[in-house]
Length: 135
Image (cartoon, rainbow, N blue to C red; front, top):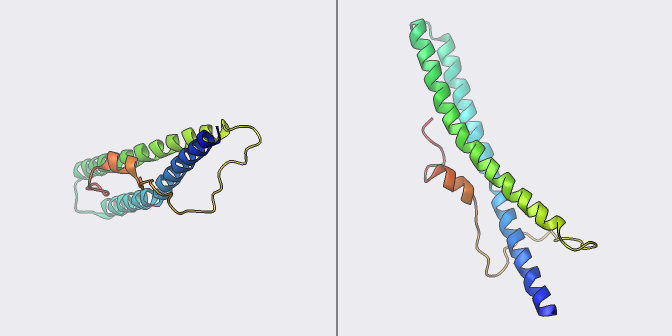
């Protein structure tokens, strides 16, 4: 019985480490979103002050700019939603633990032996090989 408890505890800790490793990579998504929004702001301001462009051309350029930005931000949204769902599943698993359990200790960030890092799996799945699509 104790062997089964030890194995399930090790499995739970390994899963928890993988979830936290994945969540720790979210700063890359935040930086990517910031780059996309800064680029959008820059292009938008250039379009506003560019006097030589015909009004219809300016509107068409604004539409193209917003199309590109929303396409890029959709990938960001999809990756963030995937991570949120993963963390919610993990939270539910933690809440299902036996009453009186103190849960997992979070102070040790080292990877457990035999576990593999799963950094940004959903992020890579959404974006493919290019972390910054051509916006």
